[in-house]
Length: 108
Image (cartoon, rainbow, N blue to C red; front, side, top):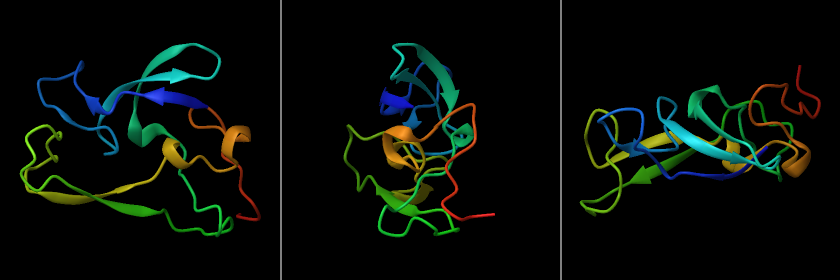
């Protein structure tokens, strides 16, 4: 389970980007005190606790609106959507973000 993560890809490429995008590679501090470099897209899908059996991935917007301190969006532009993953782990602290099965809550 992810305890803390870098907010942007900054160490694996010259291209900085927000950590929420699937292609971003960021450093994760895990609850077992290990630190790992993983691709966000390799994490299990997140969820909405009020809809635990929801099958479709939860998408949220990321908008930079010209704010210079926010990390660029892949491909340019000022807004994009990304899939929630380790920031809303299925099952909360009992859930698994990387390297295991996610809690299914009645999903096939």
